[in-house]
Length: 113
Length: 109
Image 1 (cartoon, rainbow over the protein chains, first blue to last red):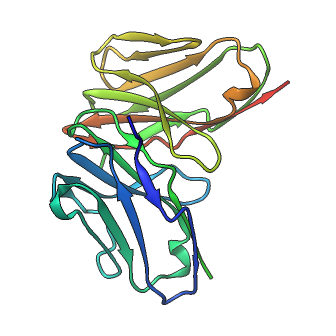
Image 2 (image 1 turned 90 degrees about the vertical axis):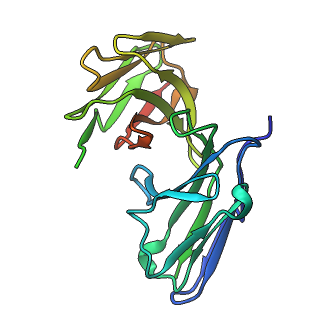
């Protein structure tokens, strides 16, 4: 089966600019996750969707980050405006249901200058 | 909040040696997953554990779900250079997964 697809692979922007990341989960996977991984750290959950509804967004900085999963399939994560500390790898993962193993994409590496 | 401790933080070992790492928590979990992450890639699932006391192997890897449901260990036998990477435990309770801090493994040939 095809894995989790993410794009772009790399993105360099200046602070205060906007950026969007896209994720297409494995077909049939109801649960979709966005993680932020700062260099040298473990991934931190930003938001979890179950179909097109939000299950957990408690660690999403809502003043600048937004995410949507229209039609319960692919998802976009947006940062507006970006800050230097947003430099990180943004990982998308999906699972069949909430307690199934997660399958990760290769991430988008964001550099904010 | 839930606390999750993964140790060791890093390991430098000789090729052929066995490796052991573990995760402990003050909370009870229903599932323990172990992942490996290589540079520039997303984490890849190694082993999934669903029952307290469960011992599961995947090639040279063996993992166990602690009987108290608060811990898990991962062993790698006869390490090889391609075992290099960061290993994460990812336990789940009530559909919420929490990443461990990772064990960075380096294998010296």
